[in-house]
Length: 426
Image 1 (cartoon, rainbow, N blue to C red):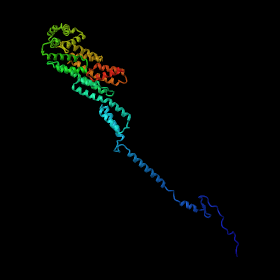
Image 2 (image 1 turned 30 degrees about the vertical axis):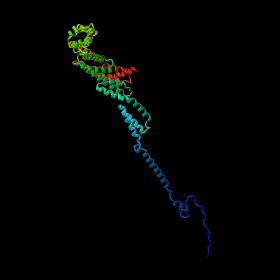
Image 3 (image 1 turned 120 degrees about the horizontal axis):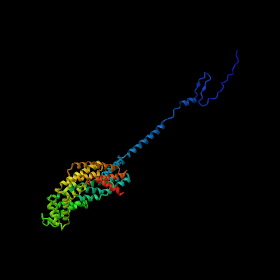
Image 4 (image 1 turned 30 degrees about the horizontal axis):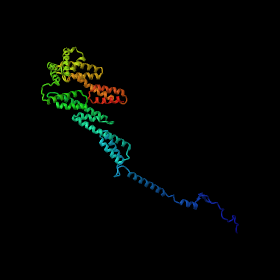
């Protein structure tokens, strides 16, 4: 028996296709069914990284080429030219030579720099070359002065230093003048030995003329020159020990110096009517004899006047008969120097100490005061030098104290004199 169909035999209803990547569910157990589109998409490979690697490689190559070019331009690698760093070293060497006053060497170094790199520090290089050009003549003058000073050629040394015009070598100029001052004093001492019997008149004449060139108007050198010329003239006429009518006072001075007061007075009286110097000598001997009778009663000033008169009558040195006078002068003026030192008046202490030492060169107390004063003067000079730019009024005062406490042969004396002249010229 055939049963009728309960449900019509027809296909299942159509369902719309899933959109995009939506998962199509089965009508059975509900598990997702992968579509052909999803299979194709999931199977496609990831994007390639080759373009990125290529770009990085290009950048690396560019960097390597840049570094190579930079290294190729480094100073010193080019065999045909020197690099800027080497030129800088040369410039430093040139400036060192300038500071040392070696101007000829500095000029060669600066010109070498300009040849190597004409664009290197153009303005500075030109300024240095101008300074070198102005200082080069001074280098030769300093060399001449040093050579002449060493040889005792005072006039030549003085003339060379007088030509030095400098703005950068003030210290060198001051030192050269100080060295010359010391040499002048040593030559003076040499001249005095030439007066001792037997007198060396030819040598004294040459030395005194040289001194007068270095120190124009120097009284002592002028007297030596006159004595030497007169002695040489007498020698050429064949005169031996006979005193000529031209300079009889010189013989009288020699007699007084040796202690023969009576003979000196007699000779001065004989020539007094004809020669004024003989009359002066006669009057001076009378004054000295009268005042020397009671030395202890004389004041310090009178003692000093008498001491100087004795030296003048003896031709510039103390006579043999003046020992009591010299001893008293040394004692009195040492006490005055000690008091001035205690009160802090160093300039006066030095002045009085020098007088005491002049009267008695072996006076230990006076020498000690002068030695201490020399150390004090150095300290004062240092203080003045430190204040020369910040307090010129105080510096000028201190420089003047140094000048009063030192002798012309002291380097601090010369330097202090230079600063005083500069301050007063402003």
